[in-house]
Length: 214
Image (tube, rainbow, N blue to C red; front, side):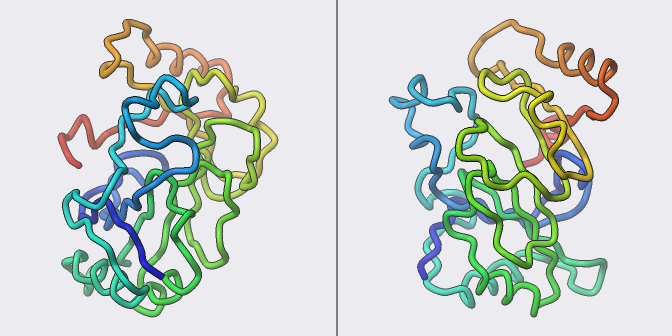
């Protein structure tokens, strides 16, 4: 299988329950909800998306022609194999369009824990150690269990109340960042207010933006 990787880099996880943990991020190209092209932004439910997942021209990005080749690149990106448990997070776009059991197995053999950040429309393969689901719609949602749900707020098509019965260890709300759209809505305060009124939910901050990390 050929893997199309937009970018691959070492940093700290900036969101959710794993905030602050060192990780290799592997961002796959492509998504099954929208094209990533600006001309299509207003036609998609993900009009607020601030991630570039088109092509393979990002930092560390390229085409990898086997699970062995990509897993070795991930291993190389982790600088300290003798300290802690190495961790890789697959994200996108939608990483489950490409992440498969062979790649997961190769990384486990190298000692990595494997995490995924998915929109939940594709069932997560066996062997993933940390599942973070961030649904943008409930239509076609297939993954309603895992370690954490990270719901952007407010969404037009999904409300926290509709996700309360899902099987996750952690329930996070994260304010939609309107800065790129020059909107004035205070989504952060809305998230704070909701979590105070519904303490099952916790606030997720994008600490990598605060710390000026990738």
